[in-house]
Picture 1 (tube, one colour):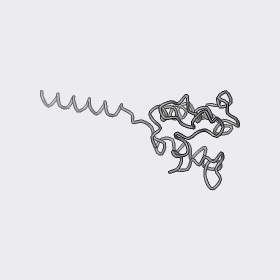
Picture 2 (cartoon, helix red, strand yellow; picture 1 turned 90 degrees about the horizontal axis):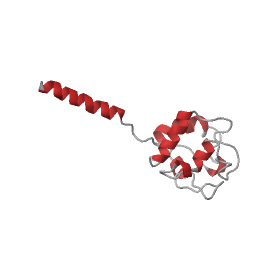
Picture 3 (cartoon, rainbow, N blue to C red; picture 1 turned 30 degrees about the vertical axis):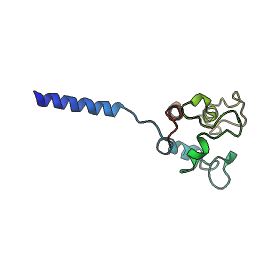
Length: 129
């Protein structure tokens, strides 16, 4: 009987551990989205658009806690606050209403809702590298 109880407890711990999701990170969770949509031609290399290089290893420093060039009253990413992060405005095409200019990002493409949620979750949980 004790053995059955131990197996049940171990099973419960495993289920709890499996259901607990780690906070998203830029280099693990967002990197594939950046690589697919941003760094190929615009936000990488010697002269990235808006001076924002989103390449691996430098994207975090160019996004988190950095004042937006288009809307100086907003940071590109404000850890813990997706609604105060200009990146979200650019991704959700609300950037003009926020005082910004130009096109939404990525141009001519709306990210899938699960990708937008991932960006919001990343920022809400502290915008970890």
